[in-house]
Length: 481
Ligand code: ADP
Ligand code: MG
Ligand code: ZN
Image 1 (cartoon, rainbow, N blue to C red):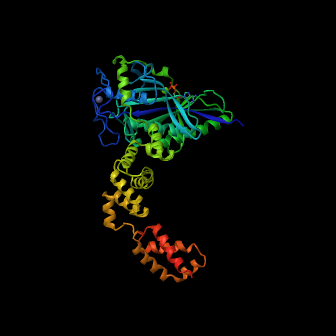
Image 2: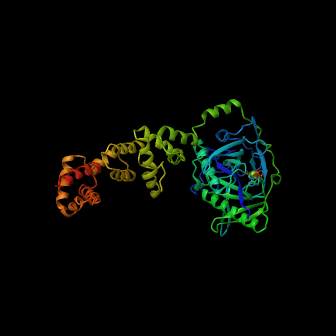
Image 3: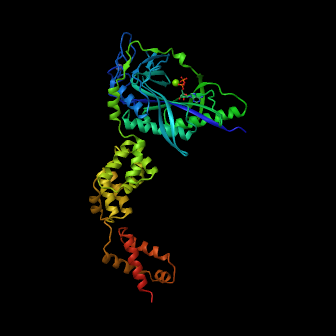
């Protein structure tokens, strides 16, 4: 039986959250329904005859930063092009995009795979405008043009991805890069990043590029992974039964978990691309590119490396902490406020993430300041409070803010390490449980942890466990005649 290998290429659309749209002065507003339909619009972005586009310089800069972050070549001249098609969300009848002269080409993004790091080649990075949004309801369909003209970066890979895991890793890595660059805030639920996946399969070891299905409009990581997995399985099934895969554009039916044919694949010729006559070519000045290169922030991969080498974190923890720029900033603020690096990583990826998940909060909305967490970590590391009390303190800070010391004082959580006080409690426990003590002395060692439990209970969990164990051992041994 033939074994098949998937061949996948991704086209990713990322909205750029500039203050104004790509070619007019209208504001870029979130797609959340808070802004009434068709209010962030003007004659330019509604495609009125006689209007002229003006290029948003910041959108070009963010596109160039993306090109540089993805190691693209940035040619000295870029050009906008008209892509003509008809759809009700596109009043001009064409989209201003780029074709022959994009801002960037021939780059790559490195991803982590089970077999080690792998470079996914980027064919090109170009800038275009978003279309409007259609709402289909019982009484007909409505068009909202608030989104029309919002700048979009399209990042096109070569067909280098070979599995659903690689697709996931690439999408996550690209998402992190875009958020680090400040292209947008990364809120997937607002449709700021959308995917199209081209999928074909071939006998393993062959280098053929077979006809593919292009899956349109995937708006979440989940939909992307599920749709690609479905297509791979369906195509292998077709070929195994002697069928053929035709080049097609398909949609993803999320509810049923299947793709469906939209149309036979369109080709570049169908769009009648030609240079946009209303806009001159963009002179991508070398000094400008150099200045932008100097502005590039530390990118996720570099930051992950630094977290492992500077803070001694595992690759896994470093990846968890750097996936989101705001989380990585928070982590570093905790460390510079005096939180021990490894303990800080454990508290954030463990308790803090758990509380955030439970309450649907993000690092931006969390009440626990980095200073407060650093203080809490110090209290635990220096044995002022137990790990268990630390969790209680964090939960309280998370719910209501405040400083760790205040909460420890108010709740009387400070650990009892005072030997005199503990000796008395232990003597009482030993006195009250003669049967257990006898069993222990006869060799039933596990009784020791039961007795420790009694002491912890009597001290409401505030006794220092190491001290209790030591003192208990001394008092029990003293009874051995
Ligand atoms: P088009 O011009 O038709 O959009 P492109 O050459 O731009 O085609 O490719 C679109 C996407 O499809 C790219 O991400 C590319 O890597 C991917 N792709 C091209 N050929 C194949 C193939 N045979 N199997 C899977 N993906 C492919
Ligand atoms: Mg294409
Ligand atoms: Zn406008």
